[in-house]
Every structure is written in C-alpha cells, then in structure tokens.
Image (cartoon, rainbow, N blue to C red; front, side):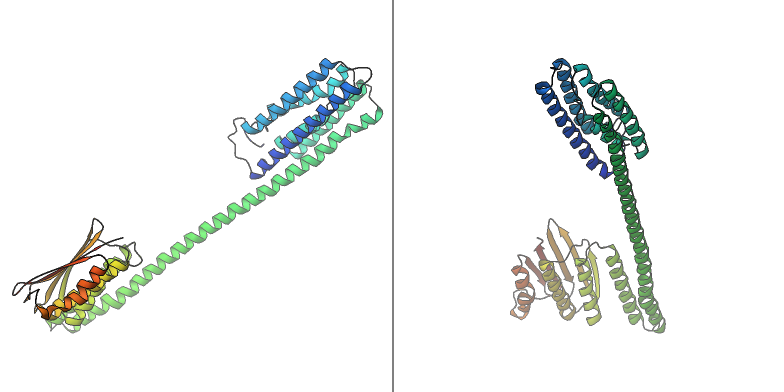
Length: 380
C-alpha cells in the first residue's frame, strides 16, 4: 500500500515515481477517451445519444481530476479509492452501450489497472485484471460489438500482468536498496562508535604513559634528592607545571591554545633561571597573530624580571575581557627608572611589537619597589 487513508504511512522513494506513472497513464487514458467520444459524435451512424457521451466525458474528466487530487492528498492507494475508480471505469465502458454507439471508454479502464497495481500486489492486480477482462468482454457481448473487439478485452489482463509485475519488481528492488542503505548507515555508525572507543583507550594509554614518564620519574628524583630542599621544591614545581599543562590540553577546546603557550613560556623561564612564577591565567583563546605577539612579549617580560629584578618570585596574570587580551608580569625586586636609557631594550623587544598589532604596553617601575609590565592587545 502506498499510503494510509490519512497519508501518514511511510512510503518508499520509488512510490513517488510510480505515482507519476499512474498520473501520466490516467491523463493519456482520459485524452484517448475524449478523442473517441469526439469521433463517435461526429462519425457514428446512427447518431448516438449525445447526453450519455457528454455524461461520460464529464465523469471521465471528474475522475481524472479526482486522481490528481488523490495523488496530492495521498489517498491514491486506498482500497476505497481503487473501488470507486473501478466503478467509474465500468460506467464509462457502459456509456457507449447506453448512447447507442461504439466503445468510448478508451484507455481510462486500462489506466485504472495502474492504480490497482499501485495500491495492491502483483497477485491482486492479476485477479482484478482477470475480472476486468471478463466483465468488459461480457459488456462487449451485450453491446453486440464486433467479435474482434471481444478479443480486445484481453488487453486488460495483459496490462494487469505487465504493470503488476513491474510495480512489484520496482518496489522490491527499492526495498532492498533502502535496507542496504540502512545497513550501511548502521555499519558506519558502529565503525564510528568503535573508533571512538579506540580513541578513548588510546587517550587513556597516552595519559598513563605521560604520568609514568613525568609524575613517577619526578617522584623518584624527589626521593633521590630529599636532602636538598631547594632541589625538591624545584622538582615539585616542575611537576606541578607539567600537570597543569596536561590538564589544559584536555580541557581546552582550542587546537592552538593561548593558555598553553603562556604556560610554556612560564616553564621555560623557570627552568632557565630557576625562579618561581605564580600564574593566574583566567581565559583561553585560539592563537592568532596578535596573541603570538602577546606571548612573545610576555616571554621577554618574564626573562627581564628573572634576570634583573633580583628576586626569585614573579607574578603572571592573564585574562581576556571585552575582546582584549590582558597580560601582567610583575616582580617586587629592585625596580628601575622607566625613562632610563639603560632600559631602552624594553621598547624594542616589547613595546614596538605590541603596538605594531594595535596593542599597548604600560611599564610601571619604582626603584626598590619592583616592576610591572602590562600588555594589552585587541582580539580580531
């Protein structure tokens, strides 16, 4: 069945094509009938009763319009409509008898068999084709048409066989294609699930290897250097950095993480100068040209603080607010005079690169109280 009476049943994609075939045959059958009625009214002798021919034309035209409506409203394949259309076809065949003229139904009854094939199965179409052949043959006898017309009734059985088989074969092939497509989609989904499970296992293995290579080895080093508090403290900070870096990798949605790059420059400065950098990095973003300049300027500010401040602790603060990346590097060391030419390197290595990407740098320093470098760069 192509659809339920309310049109809510699922249909195969092929049914759309079959519906077009049914409509085409109905229109051709109606056109054939119109031509035969016109010919009968002009050439038949004795002159036929035009009332019945006009009535047949009206019924056939209304039936064709109803077929178009049935296709649009999806009740073309309902048993009630099939029966109703069959009655119309039978009435049109009988119209010629009542009009006292030759056979006038044309291809309309044959197009009805297309609707039967659309709405039922191959076997049902054959049965209805046999019944239609018998009924139409009987009408030929009653109407006392030429004997050759009697054998013409066999066309309905032939149409039923060909159309019923073709519709069933096309639907079976489409059903197999749809099932194969569903199996393919399910197989792809299962493959995706398997790949996801494999990725999770690989990720767990990577985490385990990383913990083994970092945490366990660091703990072993701490154990071996337990007599050197400074070294133990340094190793603990190195491990804390690595863990933060690992956590950031798993939490960040960005492939190139701004937070990760800041953690990298912090680690490089700590390892190079054996200082302690306390960081607060509130926000993250995908790296771009402006943020690369921020990272490079931050690295330079950290290195300057580690080399020149005379203290072992440096503060690093970063946030992204209102579309602007803010980074602050601060120490509480010896400080300097910001106007001093001996500090002119800050301009070349930090201020000018930042200003080149539309940012700004503020350097606050007081001798004996420390230095703060504030970097601001707008994000695109």
